Structures are given as C-alpha cells and as structure tokens.
Image (tube, rainbow, N blue to C red):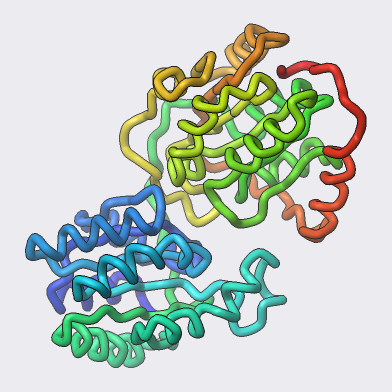
Length: 372
C-alpha cells in the first residue's frame, strides 16, 4: 500500500497546494493527511469541489480534487463545460468503487464501477489506474504533469486497498446523543409513514432498529433523499412521508430544500441528523461551523423548523408538529461515530427494497399517524 503521508509529500513537491473533494473510504488516508496539513476545503458535492479547485488554479495555486467514482455524474458538467472548455488543468484523484469485480462491493457501485473508464474515454480525458506502490504513483503523476503542461486534466483511478488508512483525531464534540439513540427516539413516530432514509449509516441504523416494508433504504444516490421524498409526497398527498437525512447528504443538494418550500407538501417531514461528519467514509468533516437548520428551513419556505440535541427535545419537537400541516424540518445534532450497524443488503437486495416499498406506497390511504 501507499503511505498517505508519502502521497501528500509527493503532491506538495510537485507544486500542489489546494485540495477539495467529497470523501470515500478508499481515500480515507489521503483525506486525513490533507486535513492535517491544511489547504483542503471540504465541498458539499463533487461539482462544487471541481469549481473550487478550478478557481484556485486560476488564481495561481496548483489544485487537485479527490472524489469517489459514484460522484462522477456530479462532475461531468463542470468537467466538460468548464475545465475542458477553458483548458484549466486539474488533477482528479478518483476512487474506483465496484471494480474490477462489482460483486465485491455494494450493489449501487456496480454500474459506475464498470463504466468509469469508458466515461472518461468518451470525453477524451486522460487517466490511469494506480497500483499500490510509490513507483506507480510517481509514474501517474509524471503523466499528470505532462497533461498539465498541455493545459489538460488527468485522472488517477484508485482501486480498493491502494492507500493505507490513518487514525483521525477526536473531534472533541460536546454532544452526547448518538445516532442510534436519536433514531430510537424518532422510530415510534414513523408508524404509518412512507419513509426515505439516506445512504450510509443512517439507512443501516434504521434497518437494524426498525425494518419495515414502508422504509426505502437508499444505497448510493447521495443527496437525493429529499427529492425522492418530495416526489412521493406530491404523488400521495394522502400519506405521511418522512425523509431521514444526514447533514452531508442534505448539504450536497440544498436546492431540494428550496423546492420543498416552494411546493409546500403538507404531508412531508424532513429529519436531518447532523454530526458534522461523513461517518460511513471515515469520519471526514462536512463543515466546521454548525448549521442553523431551523432558520434555513424557514428561509426556504418550510412551515416549521427546529433543532434538537436530546431525546427529550426530539419528542417535544415531533409532538409539536403532530397533526400540523407541513412541510416540517427537524434537525437533530448528534455526536459523530458510533457502532457500525448491519448492511441493509445483508437481508434485502435493492430491487426487493423497491418492490416492497412500492407495494406499500400504492396501498390504501391512511390517516396521518404520528408525523403529519
């Protein structure tokens, strides 16, 4: 494996000084070391990361973007219409999930894992697969340097077990409520609702706590839980709909919240568990300052917004909106970390999750119970 510190030193020796990205567990080590060194700006999604790096590049700082290949779709617009159109040369370090054998990774990585190289070939962007040796790293960075001199970008594709991992220092959070306790407080209020839970630990935690056919456990498609929930809420205004989101996934596509506020679905409740980190990829931070979720919700048009930090406050906030037309946003600030729950795919395939949820969503109208 490649030592993440050696990777960072090599980039710095070649003049790189600005980094942005969206985390992946395959790149946990490099992310940890870059955060320690400074010069790394966490981005809410891959397209924003690329725009940040391009802006820094235009201002004279050689820049790199670190992302997961599942986010390649978020990159394609700024990649083709900004970087390639204006000939802004960036280095992209991209994890290669779902490759070479898609069955060795989670099912939502299968399509992109087998298509990443073909997509890059289709847009004529140079790339190479990194082997777990410093010699391979040097060779690919030499190719990236050559592309840089041609005002072209270059992609280093990183398979599993290429980089070593690094321990991350404690965040020192003063919050005591954990993810499992927060969801345990929420779970009784989900009865009768159609529930969308975001990808990562939240879906896994909810599955372990309260598996239900009316739960749509998202695997992948990060940032789109609120879009799914809004679409269902508009299609079935007679059914209560709850979206159980995370701070990283909510920040990824904040425009979805504005659309909720504009459409005003009375049957939608949006729960956001905010621990300031991406727990499922190694605990990288989402942002340094806490979000004013209640003020944001009201600003974009939700009928109510609340922030909770204890189980008692959760019960109080959910009780206050019971039977009240929404949309509502309840943010729950929780401590980072916690036990690793079982994967949903240990019991249900993605098509099974879709089929049983669809049967529930097509069922008879229910009077709102618990959450409106």
